Length: 263
Image (cartoon, rainbow, N blue to C red; front, side):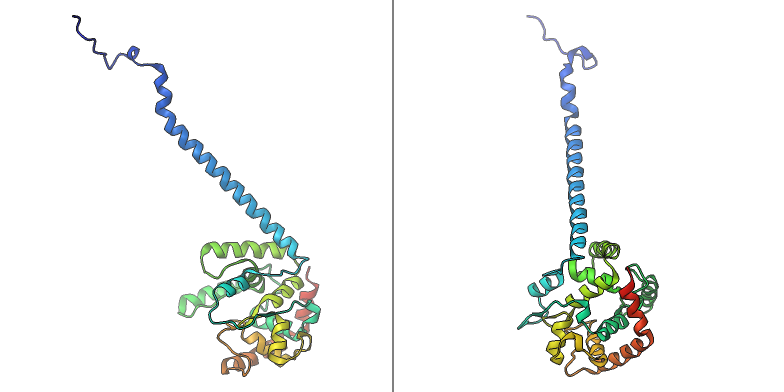
């Protein structure tokens, strides 16, 4: 009986050429998966880009029936809300006193910047390095983008998306439209959204008839409308409203004229 032939491991003639593709199959599979992931990521990014641009372009002409901040408040209210009040009005139907009061309180360079106040950002950065109390530097444009499209956490993702929507609004809207949307969706108290609802709730009159004093009180609660009260005004609101009226006097009507003329 012949002895079995033991193949020489160094002899390539004993190996079938068809075995080579099996050895590299996992590499090819991984590369294919990577390409599929990249394609899907690209499609998602393109869809998000088109949706964001389209949404901002549409809201240049159509008043939003709902916005993210109001939805989040309805889902996760800091306290019980008994009634939600909101009525959309054109900017021409909102007292110029309130328009100026909000600019004086929140963003005095609103007519000048392109959505981001670099001076305020630099000042806030220096202040926050020295103090435990954090100071913000969000412009009215950024606040409008946040209220319309964003959620409330402080992640880098949210801030990045907020900056993107701010840029889109500054490119596609004029300053008057940004101010109009802001004044119609900003929260002035628990369940009270917009200037018209705030004016009727707190002062029993339309927003077009608000006085300088009343407007300064409304603007004074904007940092935290759930914490600060308007009627009767808390000591903080009284003090801040005095400061706001002083700033309004310094800014003057010329500031509003520049906002309404800025395209």
